[in-house]
Each structure stands twice: as C-alpha cells, then as structure tokens.
Image (cartoon, rainbow, N blue to C red; front, side, top):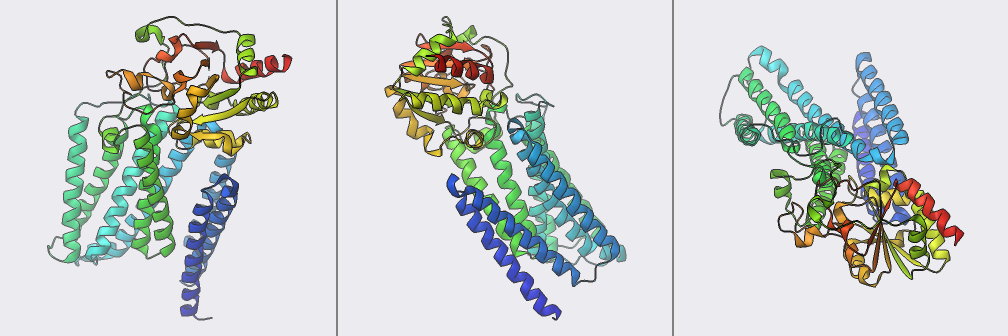
Length: 486
C-alpha cells in the first residue's frame, strides 16, 4: 500500500475516532449509558493514537524519536492509569486540575515545537520566517491559552490540596500586573501575526524574543488569574480551565492539521464553557465577577454563632433516628464533609432503611456542592444511589416546604440562608437549597466551623435545626444502628 492510500486511511481513522468522541459525549448525558459513553470515547482515543503511530511509521522516524514516543506513551499511560485508579474521591478535584494543567501544557508545547521546527533553521540562516498569518494566529492562540491553563490549573490544584491557602491571595500590584500581562501579550501577538502576513518585517531573532514575551505573559496571567479566587468559586474555575484546555487542544489541531485534535478539543471546550456558564448562573454571578473578585476561604474554626446570633440545639443520635424513621418525607443534602469522610455508602444504607419503613427519600444536589462540577453526583453514584432520587436545586427546592426532615450531611455554604437575606454577606444572591423551609432540619457536622466560603451559617441557630455533632461517616453509622433498633 502506497503512502497516499495510507494517508487516506489515517484521515478516515481520525474521523471515526472523532465520531466515537461525539457519540460517547452524547451517551454521557444519562447515568444509564455513561459507562458505555466512556468506553466509546476511550475506543476513539485508541483509534486516534493507533492511526497517528501508523502515520509516523510512514515518515521513516529515527530510533531516538521512537524512543521518545514509546517512553512517553508508557509513562503517560502508566501514570494516568495509576492516578485514576488510586485517587480518593475527595482528591478528584485536584486530579482534574492536574489533568487540565497537563492537557493545556501539552497543547502549548506542541505549538511551540511547531514554531521552532518551522523557523529555527531560518533564524540561524538569517532568512525571513516561514510563517503565514493564520498559522501564526493558531500557534499563538494555542501557546497563550495552553500556558494560561497550565499555570492556572497548577494553582487551583495547589489550593485544593492545601499546599497554598484556599482563600483569595491578593499580591501587591497583582491587578496592575495582570492587566499589563494581558495588554502586553495581546500587543506582541498582534505584531507577530502581522509579521506572519508579511505586513511588517523584523529580524527573525526579534520575532523569537517577541514570541517568548507572549509565552511569559500568558504564564504570569494564569498565575495571577487564579490566585485571587477563593475556594467557594473553585468548582467554576475548574470548569473554566477545563474549557481552556479543550480550546488549546483544538488550536493545536489547527496548527498540526489534525482533525481529531480539532474535534476533541472543540467538544471539551464547548461542553466546559456551557458547564461554566450554568454553574455561574447557579451562583447568580457572572464569570467576569468570579475572575475579577473571587470570594471564599478555607474552612475555619470560628463559631457560626459569631455573627449569626442565637443558640445551638444539639440532638442525640436516638432523637435524630426517631425523627427520620417516623417521617413521611426526608430530603438528604450531601456536601463536601460527606466526601471527606467517604460516607457515601453510609448515607445509601440509611436511605435504604428509611425506604423500607415507608419513608420517601430523595437527595438535593446543588450545582456547586463539593469542590468540582458533578462532585456529589459521582460520589453518590459510587454508592449505587438510584439516579432518579438525585434532584437538582430547581427541582427539589419547592419540595422542602412539604418535607418532614431535611438531613444535611457535611454541606454548609449551599444551605446558608444568609444568601437570601443578608446583603452584607459575600454569598448574597447565590441560589441555595431551601433547607430552612423544611419542618425539621438535622445537620451532621463535626463542629461549628465555617464552610469553605468562610461565612457563618444562620441555619445552625434556627430553632427547627438540630445539630448532630459527628464525623459524617461515624455519624451515619450511628444513625443506621439507631434506626435498625427502632
């Protein structure tokens, strides 16, 4: 088979792989078909990688290049498999941020490599660069977006890991430096694009310096963009950086002429952008507001009584079990505390016991509960919680007034009624789960510490609220035992 026919088959394989991606993403719309969608997308990636290897074989690649390819596949595949298999559910947001960084960085390096391979020998010879306007545009877009994603995702992951504090970090002159990086990066990019079209002429070495300036500006902006954003906004930031990763990958596809990268990146970028918009709307905030002035802080130890006022009513495990077992309708509100304690199986066991006693049970899922988009959905799916029982905020909120008991397990900010009533609160205007409208509320919480947004929660001093102080896993185990004893 000649090289032309092989080229056609490779392109056909890319299209097949891209179709697998599209169908896989569609199947992920439903939990019933999500696993099939994942497998189909993985199959598409296998087809893409295999086709690329066949394409490389036609180019008479040297031994050193093959060594790089094999080592890269081995290290990347092995490390990715190990990390995905061993990561705890509580660490999933950090892992997603790291994968975003890897994806954005890889896309930027691909464009950088293409730029160097295209022009490096011309610079040494003193000739004019061999770029055209459109290719220069795609290379710069890839490098800039990928670099912003790389440094921004690393900072987001470090915040989630606790390596740096989760609250907003405002550097002296940080805003000015951010704007300078944006203006400088865009200005340099325009000059490079004009040089690529031939409208302006510079020495090749000058173009390389300008390219390096654009790269540094993007890396700096990625750092300064995420540092001032607090923990409460982190789910939106992760989703936004995921969209950036997809866009960078799509730009890389245009740079190297690979339809697979174009389609896959466009799918990730578009879906990430849509998810980011939905999550920002769920918080009643614009994406620009989140990026310009984030709020939130790491969980503190100050009492929620500090500004909320009132007194706390503590309930025993037996009292809580009686309320739950003899209720007609119970809504469970899971939060990050449940994820930290790995208590998803305990909450499923408790729900099964209540349903066996004739209690109607459902779960209230806030769009930004946890530390990443869909965190609670994935967590509860791991415990085989029936998907129809998971209710989104708009669907479940009208049901709280008809609910006997709302059981809050580790959720804080998403149940804070100050978002509706306190104009001085940094979370004012954020839609919340209307837990305080239930007839009775039981909160399973380790202490009266503040949540990730760093603000007090008046729900805890509401007369209808009973505080059951315990680690989520231990508390649910005690509730299960007490309900069984009734």
